[in-house]
Length: 222
Image (cartoon, rainbow, N blue to C red; front, side, top):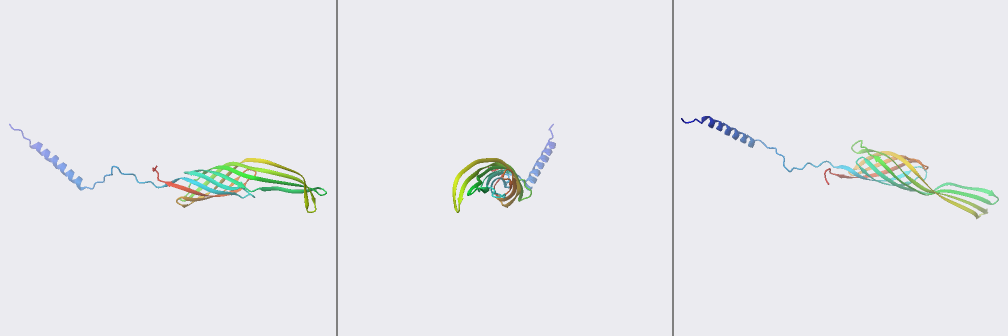
């Protein structure tokens, strides 16, 4: 007796129809496939490394003045300072000893130099403005010259009878702290004025003005 295969053929026809319909719908619908070798979009430029160039002046009398040079990475900076100053006359006295004999005394500070280093923090408070907080210290050197003369004065003429000159080298460690604001002028330039205070024998207020030169780079680029 022959076997009937009607059921199997019917199942085969149903499966074929389902596959055909699925393929048709897939071809008709839009496909959103990502490229295999697609590159990520470049990130926004960020200024991480900067160079700091500045000038500093002390307000106290004939205070020191000089230049600053440093580097900044992210929110932290290290700045060096080198300065000098004019000679200072501390005293200039003259006393009559007896008759036409006079004593002269002169005291000066000469060869005044300074060398220092400071650490800074630059937290940003808005898109184009940052606070600058700095503190550091350094070494100051000078020579104290003391000249003592004994002279005879006759009318408009002077005769040097004796003289003594002492040159005393001096040095001391000083500290300083300061603060200010950094204003973004262009994409790669910011201006930073500060005011601060220095300790030591010649203590007092000082001010500086800096240019912060930034070098933007794309993250991920080498």
